[in-house]
Length: 159
Image 1 (cartoon, one colour):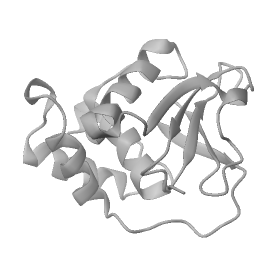
Image 2 (cartoon, rainbow, N blue to C red; image 1 turned 180 degrees about the vertical axis):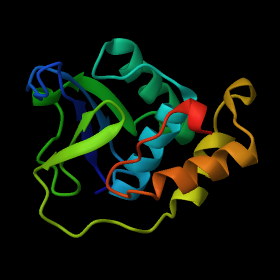
Image 3 (cartoon, rainbow, N blue to C red; image 1 turned 30 degrees about the horizontal axis):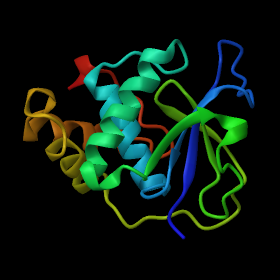
């Protein structure tokens, strides 16, 4: 039981490999949550996970902060072939940078329980104070990410 998902990133050839590093979410694996996590990280100006491991580390940091101390079993990091990819919930989000570009092991209905603004506000509140953004910045991220709901594309300088 859960709302599971695996997030993986493509390489420089735009391919996702089974031995690539992936992130497992036991909860908040619906597209609405995953897009908000990705949008938040992009707005923070973190390096792209498709470029190097620092971006993956920052993504894990943001999500783990969101789950808090009670969420210790809610996130995992491993090679994609060792994670629960065919999980019966949300499958694998294939990302390039901070954008979802494909999906594997998913043929269900997309979750749409969390609107982008509310999710971003909650993610922001659960980050260390020194990382938190202003309400105006969060509002701008939500508005910019709604321009194309399939791909929250914007840069920190857009905010």
